[in-house]
Image (cartoon, rainbow, N blue to C red; front, side):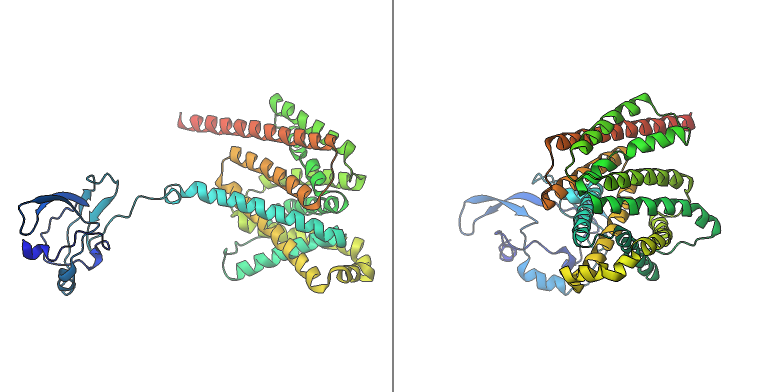
Length: 421
C-alpha cells in the first residue's frame, strides 16, 4: 500500500489522459469520476478522509510504464458521475472514449442561434446598403445607371459562384426561361423605381411609402387572383393607409417623383410575387435568384442607356470623379452592388428557415431598422406628424403581417388534418 501511495498524488494536477491509458485491464470496467476513501497517515494512527477523484489523479511513475504497453480493446461500459453532482457521463468503448463536459447554450440550441445570425446579417447588410446607396446619390444622381450596377455586380458574383460550384448551376430550358421572365421584368421595374425614389426623397420616406406594399398585395390577391381576403386583413390595412397619408402630407423632402416611383415599385413587387407563385419550379432559391438577376439586368440596360447615357458621357462621370475621386467612385459602386445582392440572397435564405409568423415580424422590424438608421446617419429632419404617421403605418403593417401569418398557419393545419383523416 505504501509503495502504491508513493506513486499517487492527492493534490490538484492535470486531468488523467485516457488516450494514453493502456494495460491489461479487466474486460469490464466502470469508472466513477469521484470516490470517497479513507487513507491512513504514515507512522501515525490517525486516518484522514480523502476524495479519490479521477479528475485529479496522476499516475506519475506508472504513466511511463503504461505508455510503453500495447493498447487493448474494451467493451462499452457507461458510468454516470453522480458522486460529484455533475451530469457528465464517462463512456468507455473501443479506444476508451470519454464523454465531453455539459454542452454550452450554443451547442444545445444551434438552430435559434443560426437563425438569429441570419436575421442579424440580413438587417446589417440592408441598412449598410441603404445608407451607402443614398450617399452615392448625393454626388451621383443617376438611379437607372446605379440600378444596372447593382444587378451587374450581383450577376458577376453569381457567375463566379457557379464557376467554382458554389452552388452548382441548375440547368435552364426554354419553358423555365418563359416562366421566370415575367418575374424578372417585375423585379427590374420595381428595383429601378425604388432607386428613382431613393434618389429623389429621403430614404426614410421611401420606406414609409413602401410600407403600403401589403395593401397592393391584398388588392391584387382579391381582384386579380380572385382570392377572398378576410375582413380582418382589410381592417388592419387601414392604419397603414392612414399613416402613409399623414407622413406624406408633411414630409419635408416630399416630391411627386419620389412618391410616384415608390408607388410603382410597390405595384411591381406585388406582381412579382404573383408571378413567383406561378413560377414554382423546384429549383433552389439561390439559382432562381441568380437567373432572375441575369434577366432583370437585360431589362434594365436599355432605359439606363437611353435615359441617362448621354448625360453620363457628357458630364455625369466627370462630375462624380471630380467630387470624390476615381477610386472612391468605383469602390462605392462596387460595394453598393455587392451589398444589394448579398442582402437579397441572405433575406431569401433567412425566410426559408423560419415560419411565416417569424418572417412577417422580421420584415417589419427590418423596415424599422432602415428608417431609424437612415434618420440618424443623414440627420433628416422630420415633422411630428411625419413621425407619428410613420409609426402608425409600421404598426399597421405589423398587425397585417401577424394576422396574415396566423391565417396561413390555420390553413396549413386544416390541410394537414384533412390529409390525415
